[in-house]
Length: 82
Figure 1 (tube, one colour):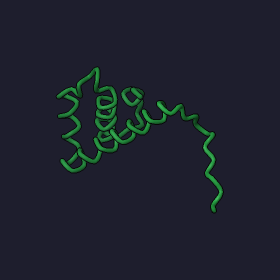
Figure 2 (cartoon, rainbow, N blue to C red):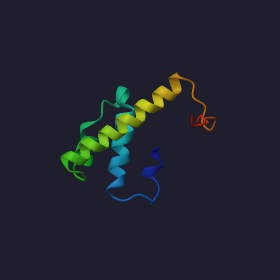
Figure 3 (cartoon, rainbow, N blue to C red):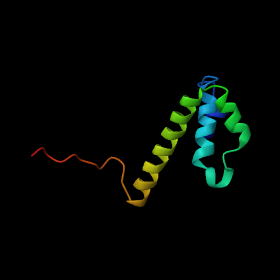
Figure 4 (cartoon, rainbow, N blue to C red):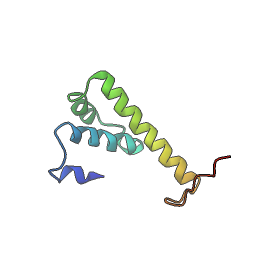
């Protein structure tokens, strides 16, 4: 995920969002550093920051559930409609 730091493909707004994503994802080790929080908040309104953090948390939760349930990417097949 840290490729955003070394590639030219992200905007000045996307970079702090990705840095915040990394901090929230690795929160047990990073404790979401204040400097990352402040950099991110410079680019997002309070409401946007809440939505961003909620989206990150939701994706992380779903990833953890998929890992816990041993989900295998690409094998899901929707059931036939009744």
